[in-house]
Image 1: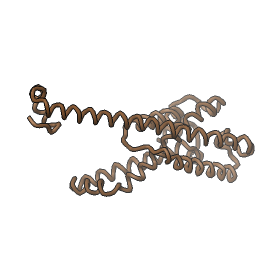
Image 2: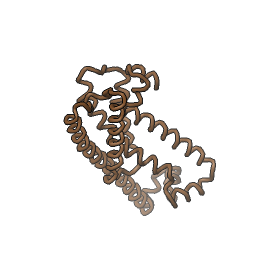
Image 3: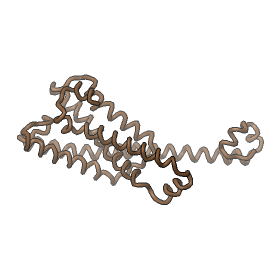
Image 4: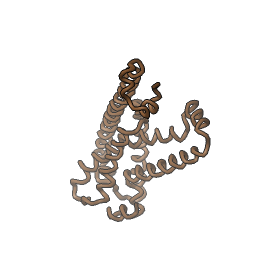
Length: 227
């Protein structure tokens, strides 16, 4: 990761002040935590583990759910802001570091949203909103202490311009969250339809002896169907 940081040409201290880095760091941490948690859970019997999952959603899954909500719409918004407002001003170069932080990150987020089965709730829009406000406060404090502008679009010497930009990004942040919700609902619809078709096909196999005789035994066993 430090190689990527140096390739962008920024100092270690300023690196921590950049919002995309916040996403990379916390996603690495939560991924490592979830992996460790699941590995430790594998030590115990599957029966006990299933009882825990059914009875109550584990705290680690709730944390992962919150981080997923935070990263989805906000990462897409960051990518859009960078390539529309920051990159054209000529202060950034098209290199591996910027592509990794401001492009591939959002691609991974979208693919993650399509593949995973974590539900995406519309009323959870307040979570990325609070995260964005927390970074906004951090950006302002950073400017007050160092008198250094992290992003040209958030120059607090130009309060009116920066305030308008924040309001516009607030609107688009909610819009991106809505689009992510629609995409997630579409994937859940496809999954539900697939499950319904499988069960319908299984019922047809059970009721039709001639059709069932044409299916290999190992497939019937895998689907838990009678011979």
